Image (cartoon, rainbow, N blue to C red; front, side, top):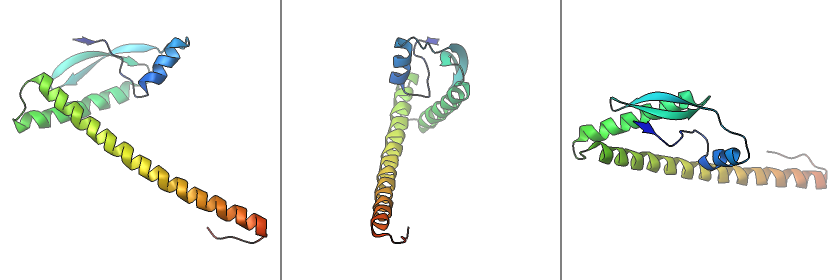
Length: 126
């Protein structure tokens, strides 16, 4: 089975923009195994390890779902795995966003301390 979608570890829209600006991305076809079935996938050169890792992660998720016995059919198992992985990704993005907000607050506090120290000609504590 040949999948028409290019695998990419970077943002799909960034790659689309690069292609439209004439910066064509070089790809190669790779074989990956998911649930003991081989798929040939187009992959950007240099992203081979990320593709293999993604295929292993997907296969592991699908095997866990299949072993649970409540979901039948490869397509349904794939959809459930995709939903689970998407949920994990969203949770990670939310955690990253919270962390980023905390870092931004701390940087603002440091900036304020530096500015106050410069204005007052005093030494400051971080």
